[in-house]
Length: 98
Image (cartoon, rainbow, N blue to C red; front, top):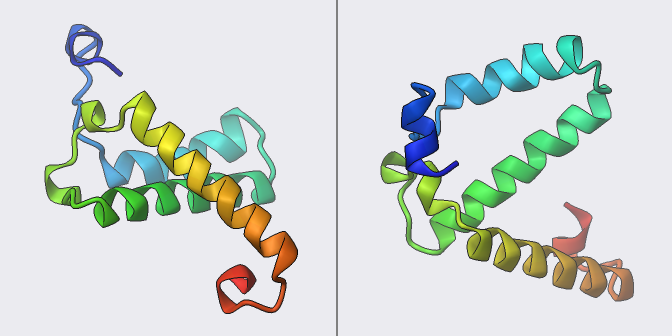
């Protein structure tokens, strides 16, 4: 979310773990009626994205929404696709069993 949009709606542009927990535990299952598997997939994807951001040298303590750019997400997605293709060919590799 661009900083100006966040400010105009009174939204803090700092990622908030509590807000994510509320979304995963309350909003998604009750309001959106999403399945447990879907919510688990979202949780895992968010966790992997945050791990990727840290691996690129960004501290989660200083992470802002603006830091999560289209380019960063596209790069992250490309890596996930590469891992997926690799794992289809190497099922016994430990990296693929997680």
